[in-house]
Image (cartoon, rainbow, N blue to C red; front, side, top):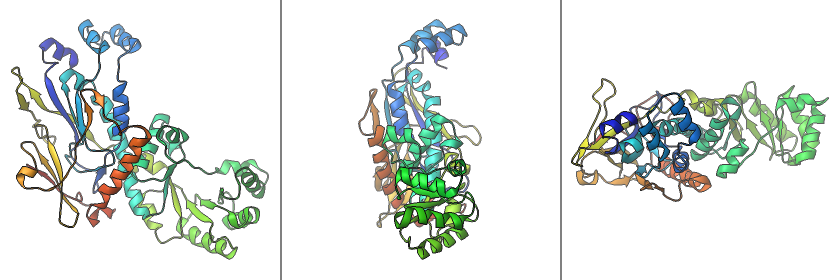
Length: 419
């Protein structure tokens, strides 16, 4: 597209692209914006080096003028978007990229790959955190996805309220608290379960977490208490009927004097399994496979669409698709979340012409400047970006109606209104 646009002379026309999703995954009431910080970090170093240009040249993918254009590529446009951690609804323009066609066009795959993955993870994580109802959730899914996605998933989960991750690289890059437990292999390595527990307690102290379901759970709990004493930090259950086991283990720990020892459960948990454990004496959840695969919705189905371009005279022209089932709304948008007198969100108001305020809607503007004339604005990347996103998510979810907490299928928690 860039090569053809360079030939037609349209490559340098000012254009506006928007990122949005036409619908939420089935059963979801809202989505969560995540990955914005990673997009901005990548944008600052988005370049075509000698290796990439050499490949494109050798394969005959592009002609010489296009290769020359890409060799000098530097994004100099402007980006506005929803702050990371914000809730989004169908058609919410979560990102608006304003630049020349050529500059904006080459970003499409990069932007969508990050936002689709991270927003899917964060949206699932938010439902899990809601289902946990105050009990901590820990991300433990690195072994169920590729190495790059594992770090991104840990970051996205933290944005949506997960308290820690077992991924140390995510902790190093983004300041996320890290923790982990031993696997069954550690117990099987030793000649006895007691020997394994003793070695772990000697290495990490009695506050460690011991995995107690390699053999017989009751025997393991008794051994754990015998070795670590009343200061045993936690035991982890990773198989079987977790509800029944949590009740029996809690009773056993209490009878042995370990009332402060916590119970951590794992084993392919999702939001529905976490909800079923609500009445069980569980202290925290370790979530892996279902989290890093989006709990049934591995993508947010976001698209990157041209909504406005300049004509030859430099005048803005709204453009939109009319394809059946894939229509879009032309023109750069202004967005407001309408808030009622009780501080509850009541609608996502999107205006292509004018502003929501001019139409009488009151509430909270959703788009903020992320990049101005090619310069990434401070506060959205690194550990600071994650912390800001966590706070934004908490505040955004808190203003949603009670229906947001329902895990059953239903309509989006608030409607989208176009002006």
